[in-house]
Length: 96
Image (cartoon, rainbow, N blue to C red; front, side, top):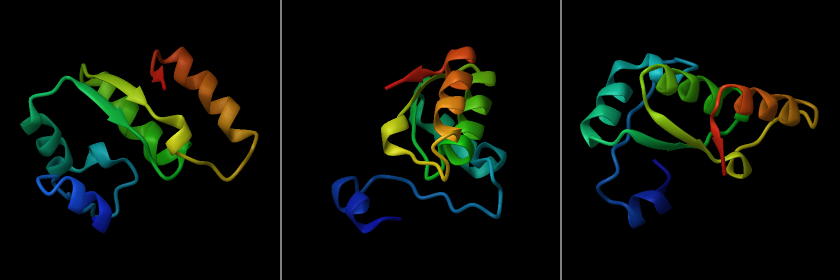
């Protein structure tokens, strides 16, 4: 876990992934989300079109309301970002 996050939120749970691209494919990640009892999630990721997109789509399919933090996520292509934002809007993800 990033040390600064652990300092500010010592109760934060770190769930290591086992190579899954979509964090939602990790049962321990889903259990950690479910354990919060929250039905609204805020998701950002290193790569908007991968790290943020896949768990967001999975959480939406599981009935969660999801806010995506696009300005805290990035991409390797200037073209990929606006294309992905269109997908976000079409899938009814909430942009913040």
